[in-house]
Length: 109
Image (tube, rainbow, N blue to C red; front, side, top):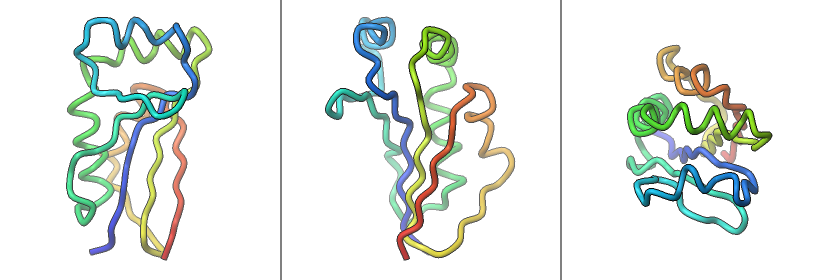
């Protein structure tokens, strides 16, 4: 199994992310000016499993994430794979669909 790393990144949200971080119950951590929530599954788990796990963790913050997007905040889902190919199960794409997340995939064989 190839190693993969999956995260949801909120790009430079500034004070607009206070709604997401004000209650202290967020999964996002600062990374420079961005906020990042990385999958905590082991890197040898499939990309689909990482995505499903992220969805299960973020499903209750969907409205807050959508509100930030409406306010002009950019969010992406990053997938880094140490392989030449990747397959993603359709149900694993649910978070992208519900939160309108752009996806960035990088391959590092």
